[in-house]
Image 1: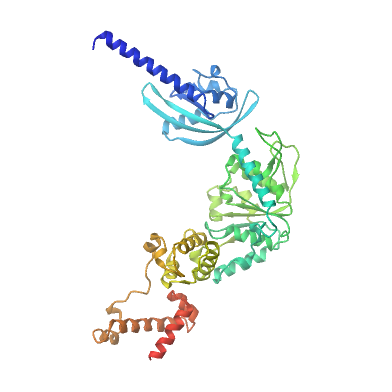
Image 2: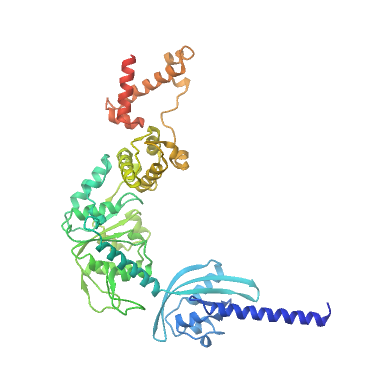
Length: 490
């Protein structure tokens, strides 16, 4: 290729790149999200039309200028810090919330920032910005629709979870009985309560039961999961907001106001930001709160119940919860036992969940394989009662008969399952039993071993058939049948 042809080819390629660049800029100017690109030395390289609208800053004011200069007149101080962190670590920061003023306009955005490193001359970070107000308005619309839908339900269908009472907590174990007795004792008082228990152990069930056994049972039970709502929305949901307090804000009552003369349940308190904990503490101490953008303190009168899946003392040691808030909310601490601490309850819980699944899925499971119960009792249940319920639902749906078999359980349960007191070798048999080997059938040998096991178990349980059946992992009726069979054969 001649020099002339090479120059012509380069010019053609250059024109092509310019056209592509122009096309990409046109496309980016038509997206609703803000897009901005800055170099490794923090100079703004690109700023699309949506960014101009969201931040109320024109391109002429920012292109070619440093981030510090662009945002010098705002109260946003972390932008270049975030830039450096992402640039250094190469780890993107997603859905970061920022609130700042630009030219007398309050800007609320969710931004996600990534680094790029094409070559030595082209590296830096780029961010995508979304306005936070639409997300807040969307959440408010959903809440209003749910309230409307609930109000239009027939009276017999318009039920809320606070109808749970202590009698709804199915159990046979002493551990759970003692826990319920303690909760019943403190329920009629006005003391604030902290519920501690692992995930799925039934903390909200206890909160609702305490509410219904308290002096404020006729009032509302208002619950909020602190881990399920973005930090940026949590404050307005808790305390409410005045119209115009932020972009798109409408007048709304906070949950603290809605809990008047009732119970306010803070689920997963350990997920609440420390900054918001200080405001909740003040509301508890002053018995009043102020809406976002408001100037008037509103009196509140409710009982506080909170829950955590972290040990109470660890909350303070790790500084997850402010110590002053902890002492306000943890007047009484109720520790709810995990499912592995009350294995005796598995039988009654399985029966209840099978009945519920039959009604929900129109199935007809009426019996369960003893081995399945034994597997359930040997498992540690990190997800507690909730995990057991989901597993029963799955087994019932998969079963095509009235008999629930262990073949329907997840594979990990089989792997976790260890056989206890069910393996026998000839060396473990009594001398007279070893002598029988070779002189009788395998069936008779197995029956003799089974009879021996049942006798030993009954002796350990002092003749208590129910206790022996639980220890063997079979139903009481099945054990009685085997006892009668062996008595007849003897």
